[in-house]
Image (cartoon, rainbow, N blue to C red; front, side):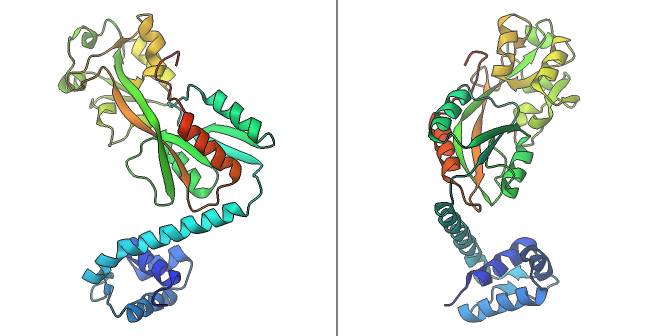
Length: 300
């Protein structure tokens, strides 16, 4: 065998962590073991993978050409072992589904009801966390499935499937100066205070953070209360504000820089491919992936 998985893990860890000592800490091995594994891999391949002439090892041209292939091999191995472990598992007792607080599924009850018919002995626990917390908990194994807005980057240990899109609108008090503007520009939004959902404070979501004057809140309900008091405008899920817009308590702002009266963000379901997925969890995942309806209004 010209390359073992242990050698590939040492190679990838040294690259990702930036040094042999940091790779040793990540792999829970002695530094000498990591160095030896990488050196033996270089001998087996008859290639030099790292330039060791500097303070920290850097990839050579050969190393750059092989690092992504090594990462793919290790990921495929993790998936293979997880599937093998899942096949040997009995049906799990409990599934934990975590959802970002601003995302709602219009037919979640129907999906859980159908699932419970097939797996009546499996308890389903539904929790609410921020997207960052959900990703961390899924990696740690504390959460089985997570539903989040499409993140800027998915952690390496996670897999994902799209469930649809969440509609977001900018709203203000109906008597706000912005509400009387026929088409609100980006510059005009910046002139007024923004009520910002903490979960929406994401550099990858420019529409959600525009103004230099920011008041942060934790929930859509808190944001709506402040907007109703004419203390600023806010970008919020359409389902959270739809009823208030219908009664005239809030006004959706027509945005000059959007072709639709709303912006859309992808909603993803995430799980760890490094952990075995039981039959019940796999069944619930498929039901959600095939049938989940993202709620984008007060009624549906």
